[in-house]
Length: 464
Image (tube, rainbow, N blue to C red; front, side, top):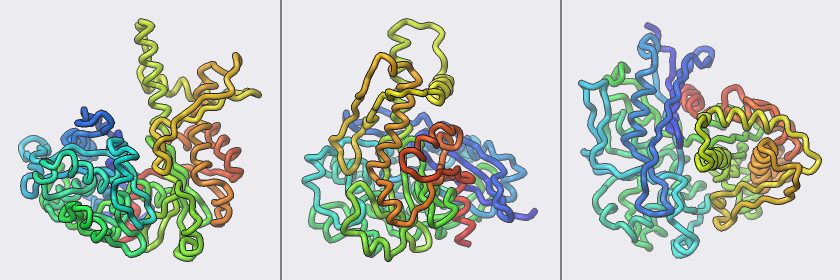
């Protein structure tokens, strides 16, 4: 049997996605998405934690859904996932595999995943941390910042565990059956206190603040091999090469990017706008790049300039949750499911034609460069408060926020001539693409796939 398929997996914030890409024509031949439903109560009122057990159960379901006729043709596995987050475990006792139960994973001595949405580190806490020289400004939800908080507030956890990584790094360790964590420079940068220019942790700065640097993983380039599948699992043969885990944002961009003069926009749980930047552009503009823009590692020794907004599709999801709460309070019996509500409100938003548009700044979580910023509603009239107008204004606000973070002028200075839309929201809704074109005064097209799981597979192909 010819092995000509690369498997890509993305451990996202709300779901696990697996795709199979045929090597010779790069055609996606199978896709499975499994919701994780992994959120669990946090030990801090501003925390955001997920169950590693539930995430791995979703991984198992996604793998078991792959037809065996494809599994026998898988030649490599590319991995990516949600960035910034942190999970800790004790080496030798982080997990075990139950071979008698569809190779189910049992999580052992392991913490919850502290996600990128974790807000326990407020401005006062951040101001009392050592100053980083990295091009990526530290923020709450970053792995090293979370570890600082645990060190000062839950020291027993720090002393209990001897490994720390992102959730996608944890999966790679599990697949390769190793406790040696090798983290990509992309995920390392997302943790903070990682110098993206020298490609090293800022260990001296961290040591002076008594940071547990033994928890910091070894760092290598994204796309390189982490190891091999150490045993047959989920009907995948042992010995299949497994990549070092990449960042989901970089994989989404890699999947969607068509030309170096393109910027890629993704609106999913959060929202990002990014373009590939060469060393010369970074060198000439580093001192004047706004705080809202980060310089992060990409692939093949390149960088991306990125506006990574905390507020994206999660704002629309919060609005839907609010509608559901209102319907419950009004004792409405026949309540549509959440997916149906999304379909309805997006259809309503697509037909809005208002000469007095409602203005909404849907900033629910602040932004990393401005944590205290909050949302607002303005220009309210009796004629623009119907449901479609409100949803349209939320979407406009999400796009406006990206433009505030990475202005059109900055894009043009970098030679960007087009925006490539990535993700289902932009791909499925022409009215939203029209909002982007009007806001940025740049044409927009839809990427060929633009999802992280596909990107993880394509990166694995390109690195071979």
